[in-house]
Image 1 (cartoon, each protein chain N blue to C red):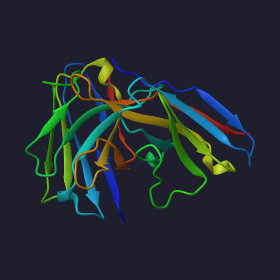
Image 2: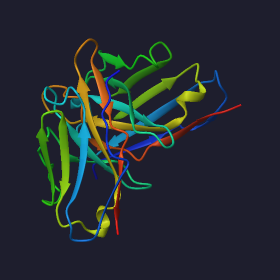
Image 3: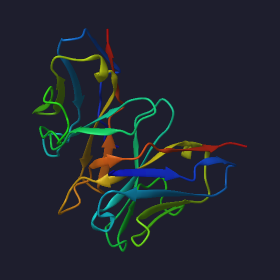
Length: 122
Length: 109
């Protein structure tokens, strides 16, 4: 089955760290760029980060730049998001998503996971 | 910053046509995408590149564009279509920015 499954969310204090994982299955993970998108309660989705298929090029939205690190292990079919210096406004459900463009990165998402909840609270 | 604007809610009876709009200044120059989100489920891409329909998406889902407004149309709405719908696009002026609309709750009466 083609799917993405996120894990690693939980409760963390402001200033703390979490590492999210996204396990991919059912498709050739190493050939796709991958993304992280988050959605805070009651709000629309917010784009977070991207990584190319080889893992040597990354992109971050300004609000997480310098605090979050996206990475991937193509041998394990797994995408990661290391989140440091977490803030209250980082609290959201975090989704990993597969790039919809099959040749070039077109910045849309044709496969999503169910998400993992990150709660930032003291 | 660039924004996409959607109505918060749309309500239709089963069998009727639902139209959900999304407005944004850059939409004439950038593709729009639509996602369906049901509680507890992963979001699903229902329209890509303004009008494309991914495999497995029913034909009753269609997309259209006119200037700064894109529209998701669901013809012959079914109860299972009740969900939140989000448009998404990008703004390439200055630094590249991926943007989502605030979402529209489709209620099937």
